[in-house]
Length: 257
Image (cartoon, rainbow, N blue to C red; front, top):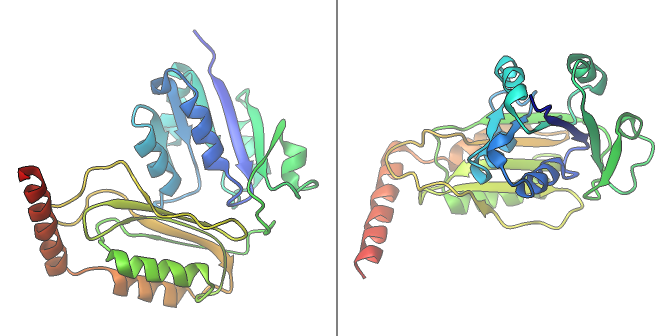
């Protein structure tokens, strides 16, 4: 039996852990032999959804699926375990110590004496994030909700310009009114990026039955205001139906031209 290559990736929030893993998977000739596990995210599975969408052939696991994950390891060729900055390295190591793995830390260039430096077999220098400690983590699942895209742009601007507290990291996946699924990503100190459309079919029949959600890391976050404003951006049943009918008609007209 082939022994799989197991890589555990940890580091500061926003430093580029998921991006580094994605690049490794792109270079693998048989991605169907890859499995990915990211514990500690609860039901807000942003990174898992992003990876599953970009690489539909691989197996992706999250919280509550640890047993299934460990059972699949012998059948894999490459295994990636991503640890969020909110997880204690020592506690995780105790769980994984029966495995033979390579420890990779993705860190900002100025980070030289952190716990990750002592833990890692190899250091990858990523984005120049400035916050070394996790101050406040806020998450919300939004599966089934549809958000107006213009409202999302305004809400995201407010989040990233500290209208709800000091935000150092924000990421989310949102279903918008034209049926697309958008990935939003912000890291303080790193140039802003455009929203990324995930490679998923437009959802144009009722409330989307696929994951959407938001995660924010920062300090002095006004969680009540964040939740209330987000709720105000979400569309009612009748508006969802109206938008979906409009989009279907536009797409149908485009096919007829």
